[in-house]
Image 1 (cartoon, one colour):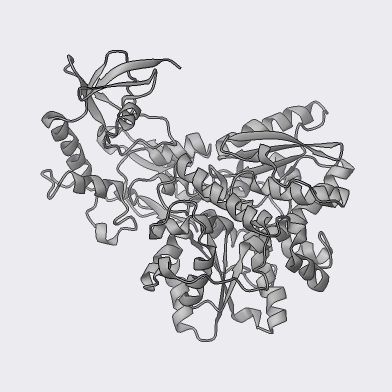
Image 2 (cartoon, one colour):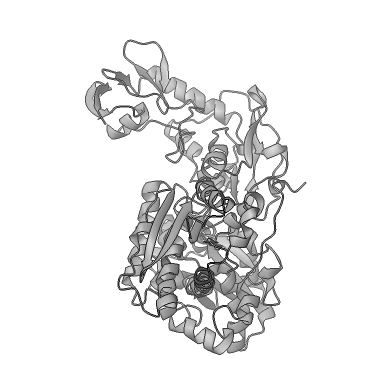
Amino acid sequence: MANVNIKINGQPIAVAEGITILDACKQAQINIPTLCKHPDLLPWASCGLCIVKTEGSPKMFRACAAPVAEGMSVITHDPEIMKVRKTTLELILSRHPNDCLKCGRNQNCELQRLSAEFGIREVPYEMNLRDLPLDESTTSLVFEPEKCILCGRCALVCQNMQNVWALEFLGRGFETRIAPAADTALADSPCVKCGQCSAHCPVGAIYEKDETSKVWEKMCNDCDVFPVVQIAPAVRVAIGEAFGYEPGEISTGKLYAALRRLGFKAVFDTNFSADLTILEEGTEFVSRFTKNEQLPLITSCCPAWIDYLEKYDHDMIEHFSTAKSPQEMMGAMIKTYYAQREKIDPAKIYSVSIMPCTAKKFECQRNDDMFSSGFQDVDVVLTTRELARMIKQAGIDFANLPEDHADEILGEHTGAGTIFGNTGGVMEAALRSAYFLITKEDLKDVNLTPVRGLDGVKEATIDIKGTKVNVAVAHGLVNVEFVLDKVRAALAKGEKSPYDFIEVMACRGGCIGGGGQPYGATDEIRAKRIAGLYKDDTQLKLRCSHHNPMITQIYSEFLEKPGSHKAHELLHTSYVPRKLYNK
């Protein structure tokens, strides 16, 4: 791409032709304030904070959407620009509640930060709040439209990144607002609870349903309870961000230690049940593949994707793996196998799950299969953000904690379980073991790099001793239909599916970019978190799920074999077509 020569505040700089003024200013180490712009989204210039001037023109341009041009001389800061930006912020604040101390985004709010930077001490305009009701209708998210600043990020994410269309703009002019589609409750909209709206909201207008008080209540006041916890793969490379660590830094040992100090009597690792998932899902794939029946097999570990499938793609239900997610497999094993081995009444076990995902809160009550132990298998789900708050509330010095270990039962895991946390990881882990299940030999090189990376759709052909396995990996729900439409087209013609195995994760980057992870995720941060998981994978002695000795033990002592009747009772689920709107 050709370069153009421009000036920014009098300083010459060469930048790529076609980029925006905002991006050019970043290259020149000049920060321009924005509220509507996010690196994941195309610019649409709604907030008006990023205005700049060019020499020789009386107009002001919105830098996020205005492209550079040869010879352009940009002015990013002068008294008039500063006044307009401050006025814009004051107008936004005049329609925004000033209850920062009670807001979940307090000290982590983009509007709060900009107001401080501009030295706003009072709002010179009459407060005009809209008196919009709180929406707590879903099990996962809370929508507080009174705090919405109409930046549009949530709607753009929901529509353009996720293809869900649960949020939209309603009304015109001064009455414009963001609301669930059809102006219904969020639970009655097409929402799949992925939480990407909350992850991209710059303020506290939409956030995870906080259930930390439930856990504190059980941990502190119920002496007849046996609290246990599991942690998902992606949490270990993101939780540290809440305590000043770089994204991707592995904090597994400190996590174990912090959870024990919080009062959990047993600490398990969801990486173990990810290994268990691979044995069940891998066996299911090998059975279908060798018989050439009901291909492709589509992964089922992402609850937002399950919700999406049942609403939008239920014609594909017969292709969906029946294997539960690692979270739910762990929940079932805790209240059956673990309870029996340790002689603990499962009715007294309080099973907490730490997940990077808001949809996991929905998943633990999704249908009767989530009660396969005779009890609710997972009692409550906390996001990475919720756990970080609990650690801080308990006064735990996370950075200086000594390394600890998970419980041996349901804690031992392989690298394959670790990489479940990123896009392509489930596919790679499954193929490492599928190769063994088909050939009875291990792969010489377990690094299946074609399925790695942040491309929205990744396609690859894996050679299993002369047998070709065609796979696809999609992340970000907007990319799913491209893959499924190719399958539909082939099957409609009576042809073989172009893919044998498909992995889908609802969130960009997979679980490392989940809706419950620390705020501020960009592709740069996602890449660092992914690198952290692959680093963890390579550092582990065992890297294939079928090598996990605890997996071997649980089958020999309890589950019999992958795909057994007992395994299906405890570790598998079913799906039903559902309406986009519940009413």
